[in-house]
Image (cartoon, rainbow, N blue to C red):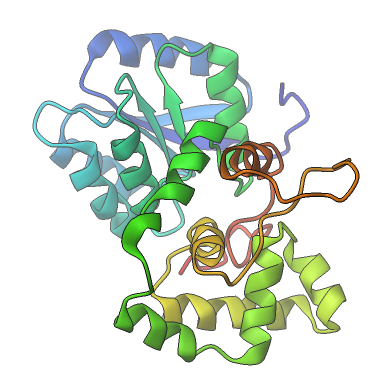
Length: 265
């Protein structure tokens, strides 16, 4: 899969089942582009090894013996700001999956999926791409859609956006990378990143994935239409839009994607 990679991906595995850890240890040992730098079965062990190793990626189970993964996830992100988190779980609770994404995870893989699926997810997430299937994207888009109008606090945050920031948001929601946004707006990529940082601060949003979903929900962006739409190019249904977005979602979600040490806000 990744024989030509020039950089090794350093992993920490957090799972309280010895058999799962042993199996994954074996799988990782056969991938020359992966290095397992730590394991943990409990909360305190996970925080210690992640703080010490500052890995590229944490594979995190949601159901640990002494805590829930959703409780541990924010602590892991504070302990290692540049570390990405990929959920690896047997739980099929989609609400928990959505909650994990809200807390900063970049994808979810079920334990009954093929090893190749997990390896692809690891590779994509470490390239700053989200790993979501269409049903999870659909659920993310449906959340809070019955709330009616925007809450006053939400409307106030949106009102703080400048016209240029709204343009950037619309292009992010349309699936454009930073370079294409810069070209379309005739500005530099550095300026795009500055706009994204300002947008994240104003909207109290952590990353590009959350921004795209926020924009689609609140009318700040329109989901891209599927390529080859026929005739009058009618708007896609929410489910098919979600499926299409899951298929084309492989673009840089972080404001500085492609720059490994860029701070994630």
